[in-house]
Image (cartoon, rainbow, N blue to C red; front, top):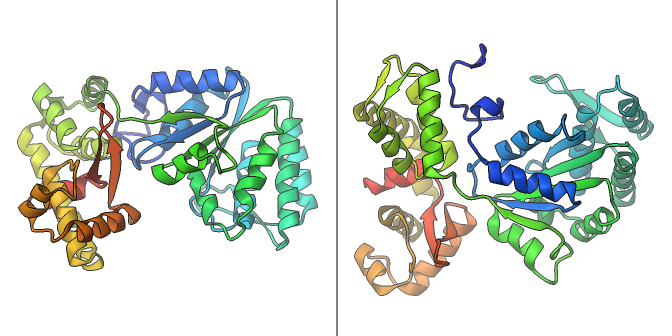
Length: 379
């Protein structure tokens, strides 16, 4: 274990391969796709480990494959100018100015009169531009892609939360990017996001620019047996004694949803006692509920009465396959099918719930936040 890291269950960022669980099939799929020049659309629920998978893939391929990985988080962007700034910053940080190609990148950046600040935590440069003309912004992206095309290295760019571009006021962004990307030979992309419906529509609808242009990778939950073995090993690293039934209880209670598993195990590893019993697990769960309760009551204030009632009903059922069915509505006194449908749409839009398919192809609804769902079950 890293001397700097005393807890073997990180809850944010990518620490390294020793603290990353499985995803071997996904890594193999990504590797084969890029060897053969295919772009990937990676779709996953929030907090399922999508970003960590990308970072682990980058760790695996950066040196031995001689590929250059570039990660761009588009969630904070609200227009094309911010897209250009985030992309430029990511490329600049990937290519240090003490390398031959890095100097070419920085010479280009300096030539377009940037505003350069430095992140207070990482110390890395943050780049933005003053130009307001869309044509100049598009030219900047075109030139950046051209620089990378001629770098002499294979480049893989991950555009995280890619669906964000559909919210830009520059409505031509999606089509323009598609036209630029299809010209590239030495750059491949991972288009990823957690808004499954929107991202799926972007790549699966025949009237959208990116239609059928990528290989789709839907990230599912980790295999429970694999995650069980990982937890057991990591607990031993932390000198914790935990029995099989407690590990299974943790996985069942968190629904094997990566971030919630990691968070609960992280907190359990921080406990002073060396033995983790079911009572210790439940005690930590109660602590989480106590910390989050004020936030959950805020959710209740922000939702309408029918929306809150439906959210609670879905939590109590754990999975709901037919939310407008008479039996479900009567059991929880939810009103009419029409009102339930309105509340359902509102909760989906607010990402309080999600819609997913089971192994038989039947879709169901579930509360997004596992901790909130478990708290609602007790009401």
